[in-house]
Length: 303
Image 1 (cartoon, rainbow, N blue to C red):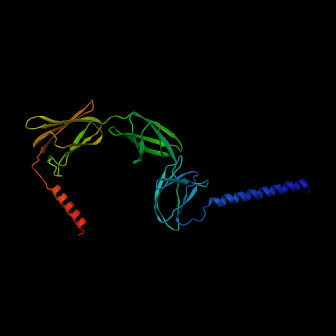
Image 2: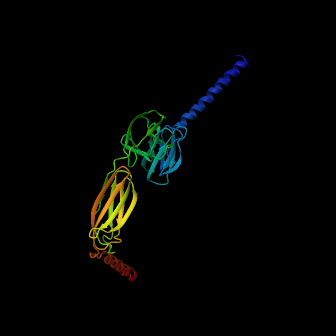
């Protein structure tokens, strides 16, 4: 064998040995080492996934898709894993001294964006709330595949959509929300109060439920004289709105309360009678203050 052929053969053998050594190193690193005390091994098979513990970023999975974390003692911790084009995963784990190993199969995702006539837009996917989109620049991750989506915004009719989303696909929805029909209900726990500072029903509280946005006017009249004693207006929002009357400008007697809601197209009115009676006095305040004074004296005197 010539010297040239011998050198070529030696070079080939040397290259094979180097490649075998490199391959062996790659394979050995693929399997996580033994866990330290209070350790947590998270395997995902996805490199570069962000890992959070109790809301704080702690690192990323390595090129093999795993990360090892170490805690100081046993206890519960909430783990979140988030990676591009995959749905976030959250789980609360109890970390033991011998360590914990978990494998997380992250769900593939795409993204949706919303061009809407109103914001915010709440997003429900397959019956579950996924979050809120506040403007047209925001994108939201949802699972790849077939999905039933409901878009909603307070005070407007919801919009259902069907969607098949490919892995990494971005889908844009153009939405035109229609306001709900104006409806109003009123609720109160009592219709008689005594604004005499006895700490019992010193005010009258009213809950006003609206189905959509509306201007609300509250008028309070003395039923005997017809005098308007209080008027208040405010911009009502969908769901509950709260009004409190402290009895200002009112002597004892019965009062008619009118609640009027308008949105430019519809008008709804409700009425309720409320009685002001300052003669009804309850000694809650005196009892409380006397009890607190007695406790204070016991503490000072060391009894």
